[in-house]
Image (cartoon, rainbow, N blue to C red; front, side, top):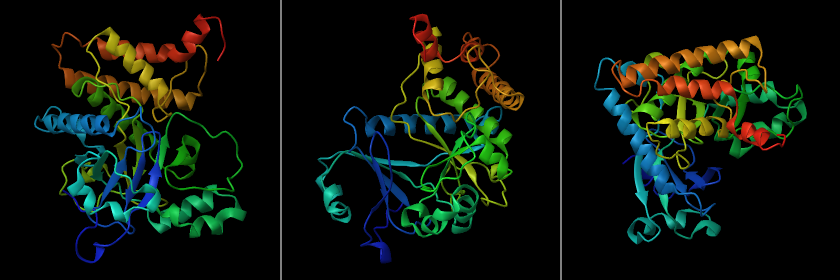
Length: 348
């Protein structure tokens, strides 16, 4: 298993929180290096399960590994990096907790269920300062640059969202920084590459791992420091950027994912998950929301690659080969949650 900083000079390093969500808080050591891991604690919501996160994470990794065995499908796995998934630990596993519990802050020293995964590398100081200088209000920049929490910087890639206003933020936080497509364009980032990569990964999750991909996250972050882990995107898929430096598109957070049947019920489940998620994927124009020409073009790129990747995964003789097209048709019909409200005689 990759290191949590339990050896040599890192032996006594305390854990610090690098993020939190509806399922739990995420912890690691300061100054992460090669093969550093994170601990995700099940300490936020009893209805959310890190065990399901662990199972679904492993399921996607298994699907990717199987696709890499075939020359027809290996290229589909080259554009997205995925953290290695090391271990699920129950709250009652006292031997494991005995060497780690004291390294959490006192208020977090109650054992709970956890998973241990590879840490996604944070962006460099140079990249962080670029984001602060571009998107933080002048009065808040020095505070943002010296904030310890901002060292844990990865970027959520929202291809389905435009900026809401032009005002820079004064209170600026870089952990899980939400970057919309307008901000990506300001940094000259390759949004078409991201759209293609997301399309391929969504096809893998739906038709190979047979899961709905509910509430997964796509983030921009540097490549891992070693290529020993076999979930790395290929070196040719590393994006070059004068602003952010070399980086990959990563995928994480699978605790809300569910198994998906290969029929119309499964398609409806995937349709709901697509719109329930944060706006990582490009969005099409619909009857209720007309997108710009540029947004529609990005959707068309995503759509075309999703259908191509789905056909490659399922094969030309598949008896469920119509399902990817059915899913796209439903997505283009609009958000099912809004449609349901409209049909019930209410407004969004």
